[in-house]
View 1 (cartoon, helix red, strand yellow):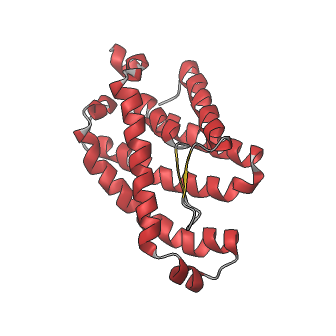
View 2 (cartoon, helix red, strand yellow):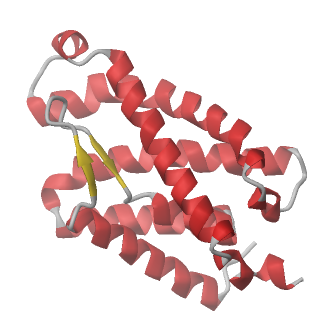
View 3 (tube, one colour):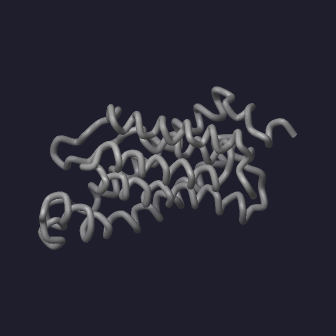
Length: 189
């Protein structure tokens, strides 16, 4: 499935939006752990709900790249955000693919719940070791064994679970509650 010119243009706008909210950093930073709960990936999930997986990957990749280019100190955060959010997007995508459902299936919020829970579990399984063996050592210089003692795994899981909920719930509200979905191809059929 190819993206139309309109979908590419809107995907570009969503990527620019994610970079903008990163640069002005809308969100909450934990003073103790230094982890953020932000809205950077909300537009990435919006792209999925509106156009499907290709647009979500495009918006996520371009958004992460722009963040890296314009805020060089955040390349590490951009790479972690990309990997973490892809876990959620893939869970949502595979749920409708396996169930042979249309993307509009998610217009009812309770249909989002199970794939979101699965996505959060996958995200946490991926990001906990990535934090201990990649992000924390690069960012702080701490060895993985020290990092495991200083930042307990449940803190990483908690922040990632909350971040996933923020991303998906805000994206769902924008797309389905505020009817942004009316501009998709599927809604015009």
